[in-house]
Image (cartoon, rainbow, N blue to C red):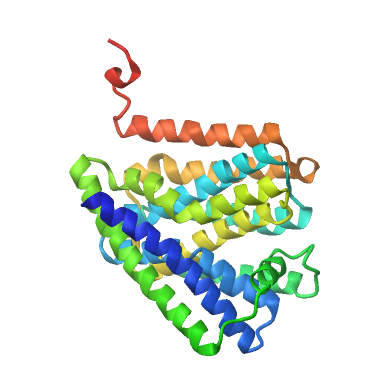
Amino acid sequence: MAYWFLAAGILLLIGGSEAVSRGGVGLARVFGLSPVLIGIIVIAGAASAPELCVALSAATAGAPDIALGDIVGGNILMLLLALGLGALIHPLASPPKVVLRDGGAMLLASLAVAFFALGGAISRRDGVILFLGFVAYTVVTFLTDERRSADHSIALSRALARSQHEPPPVAGAVFLLLLGLICLVSGALFTVDGSVALARALHLNQAFVALTLIAFGTSLPKLSATLAAAALGRTEVAVGQLLGASVFNLLGALGIAAIVAPLKVSPLMDSADIYVMAGASVLLLPILAMRWKLSRPRGILLASCYVCYLVFLVWRQGLLTPALLGIG
């Protein structure tokens, strides 16, 4: 039963995110919101909605390891696996503006979360600081993208891609938006309850389930979009989308969750995972700055780092037994 709850929750989160994006874009176009703002607020917000909803649901349910694990694990997956596999398929362009603005914000956000974790909890004050950072990042993104063309603005290119078809009627857009919100809330509840039950049934740490299964499920749309873009050779905005999603997760989702319910940082999470995320951020920026392109060899390096991290998680959970390894 726990498996079905978790699977249903993740599917509802993915579907809800898509419905919110479609409905939100439709309403924003009806009310004349600029394409750049649609890309920054509506589309990017909808993409990070699964992480936000899971973090809020887990925080209020007293499961901080799930709230933190989904965001931390999702960011590690996006920065290492998604970028690594994308570059392996096709080298990814990493323009200086994207690396310096979005990558710099991602690095600062990761280091801030690692610093706050030293106190043993992400407090409401920490959440306010993170959320104010999110507001500042959003404002800077809008000001620097407002007059740019779609070739130089990730937010604008995403908005235009979403606006290729006629917008739905207002009633249809409202219906999609409400349906998406219902799916997100229900999906978050299913995901958290299923994760807790699965961890209990299999004698696993909640952090392990969140860092692996939940993080993969909530990051799956962004991972699949990156791989599809790489396969088609349309990689101009792939790096910026993943960096921006990482910033939204850390500053927006984690900040709001901590404001609603302060998150205790368990020794398990504080011992490695948060610092792996920060280390991935530190590693990534100079790699992206090399000729402003993420090449295949460097993509292999990033993906290999993620595989090593997964092996570490399995070992820490005690699943790498001698029998499994064929020893003895």
